[in-house]
Image (cartoon, rainbow, N blue to C red; front, side, top):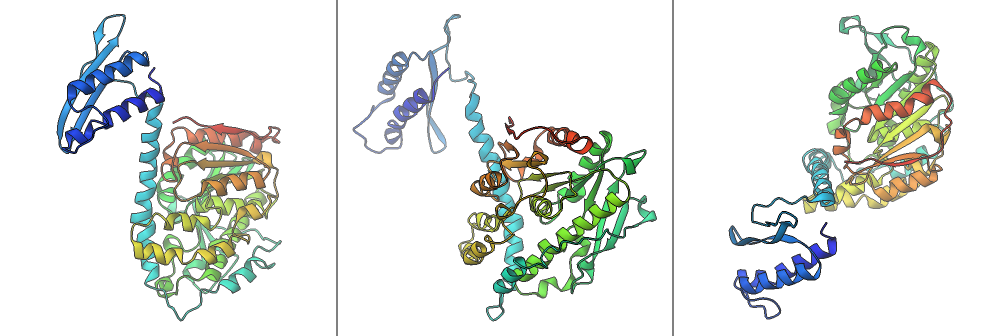
Length: 433
């Protein structure tokens, strides 16, 4: 196999020929193709490399394409311009680039457009209410100790699976004061089976309407109930007057985006346990992962939590902002960095909290090519929480959901924790492409 050093040497040698091909003067390398070919043959002999394929392209024209040496030494088969080479582990670089491209597109087409509309609501005279938000996040009313079970009402017109209940934290927006969800029951004796609550990311789709129904049915097949819960201000919970509000409003973000969401998760958890379900786990993606982690730090009734690429602190906002291609929009967003740093010293940074459940019942899923979730933040959380199980996927924030078989792997991890006490110690898994 050709080593990285050998490839680098050949590429460097070929690069010396490019100025000549482009018409520029360079006195340090071969001047003509025959001289370059002789030099490459010398390198191949020196490094004991059987053969190589060479191509020099100038703009849209191939200046030289050739094979040098042997493709199969035993069969005396020479390398030609058509010889195929196995690129091996170098494919990981292409896969990482493609994965990050999905994140980059999401930042520009979804996140950037959404923030641009929010900036239109920005008023220089209005206060972002940072100090009020810091007081609220550090106070006892952020996540109260007491949590009452929800009062679910099922809709018989929609298969009897869709439910709603009044939010335990009522606010000024009527549309947002009703919580919606769906319960995917096991075929028989559902109240005797554990439940996995699936929590979607910011914006909801594609999780809520596409991915979660498939995941929920997979849960049913292996003997678990599943429930989906619509986060505050998402879909039909989105207030009509939201477009007229000032941005940023950090107090509103803390009250609705975190406190209200966690209160609703705990209320549903209480109802499920009251119905007789023996165990409840949370499985959250992105923003939903942050909610799962925050709830795990306040509610010891949970049997397990899975945090998949969680938006675990305010660095998510800054990481995405740095990739916005519009200079004006990027500058406006990065102006919020001091506020984000202040909020990172509160409960909005999961690394500042400690879970109420054993670390053996926590699974972190990290996407190592994530353009949203800062990898240093993820590693800091892993250490702060006592190094629970962590799976480091060679994917981005967006491509993580495309990992084949991931749902089954997570369910196999959850099974002993929902059906029996966990006895495993922490593990670190690096999953293949």
